[in-house]
Length: 444
Image (cartoon, rainbow, N blue to C red; front, top):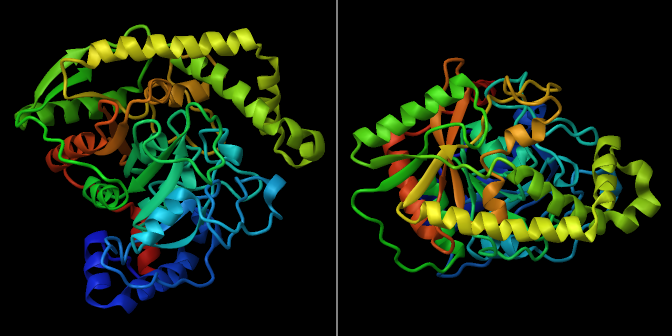
């Protein structure tokens, strides 16, 4: 079964209500063809559309949830053995309820890095998620299963959480769209995030057009017109950290395509933010340690050893470290607001590297060793600290046939405007092809 595009699926849902259930059931049946990618932890056994109503803007949409987001009737494992035997939850998260109320049907829960504490998608409890573009490579994380499910066209939409780039990074590495809205734009009710002051829900879709359809269905947003000619400040140096040459080459190709389309592309430098990953981790590790303090007392052996070590690291942080880091977030926010002021959006690469080989650390030549997490999140984590909306849009494939992405950053509270800008960028750069492994699976 080939999942119809979201636009076609919505047409089917409007024309014949049973078509929505049929699409979802066929999507579930087809997941057997993609089990090798480990994109799901749990798959729904039965699905049914909501009772008919005029507001069913997403009837026909098939979606999935990262397994730290509650769905009534299914367990929430957070990708960990700690909750592997958890009972099904009784209530939907806010986002699951909003999507279901709009007519969308959820078909399962996606694999993830344990407790959202990592950027590789490698999970000893539920299996490592495989990149649909190259089975020897990972998907990034921590929302890697959600990204893989969309890239494989198993679902139209998947929801993840993003506390340092955990939606935008895997989106860039899997050749799809990943959006982190303005902090607080989507309620975190029913979400077991990693760090509560920098977490956001995030959305994955195959195209920006699909994302805008979903956003309009779940968020009340007024008209936010953008200028006829965009003025974009693009990162023109390595002031935020090193980038693999092949990634930078593809990024500049995208910049020049946008310039040729009529956008005013202005080179900018972003100095003073290179230490942001360390500031974010000072906040995150302290908050993570607080959340897991009691669980570690009773269930420590069930944690993956590496994850347990990260959580214990948070116990080292003092209240002064934590508060100093929170103050620095305000400094970063004010500094970036000044840089952003003359532009409609700021543009950077999404990720500094190709999808890493499974089991190999993320690394750019010249970076200090053993800092793979900071390498992969260097362009994304700043906007968790500042609260700005940011979106990763596919920018084609590199010389090795692997996907690349660019990140657009908008103004807080102007999410719909950022999505319109992203749509114009997508129109220029063109749509992304389906990953070859997904096509092979469909023909099997």
